[in-house]
Length: 120
Image 1 (tube, rainbow, N blue to C red):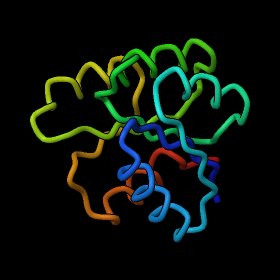
Image 2 (cartoon, helix red, strand yellow):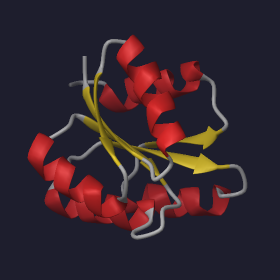
Image 3 (cartoon, rainbow, N blue to C red):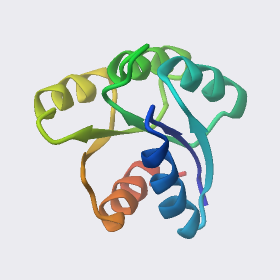
Image 4 (cartoon, helix red, strand yellow):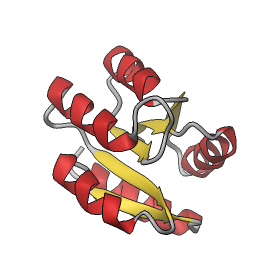
């Protein structure tokens, strides 16, 4: 079981990911923005983060960079919408380990989480 910080400004997406991850036995903490993610990352010290790319106050790429400054060993899986493929490269450069494109199947999320969480 991993402690996973789910970061997305859309409540529907946070709830969807929460259900998928909890059903698989993981503990989930939800963040509503990049700034909220930074606060909760420091408070809860999660094993893994799922990060939306497009958010209003701080995009996911910037949030990943800031989390990596706090914890260079942070494990992050980016969640991107169709058409954001160019941003995925930036996310990987920022330190993300994997990415999942919306809309996704639960199995794809669980596979990315499993790969990113290996060795924990």
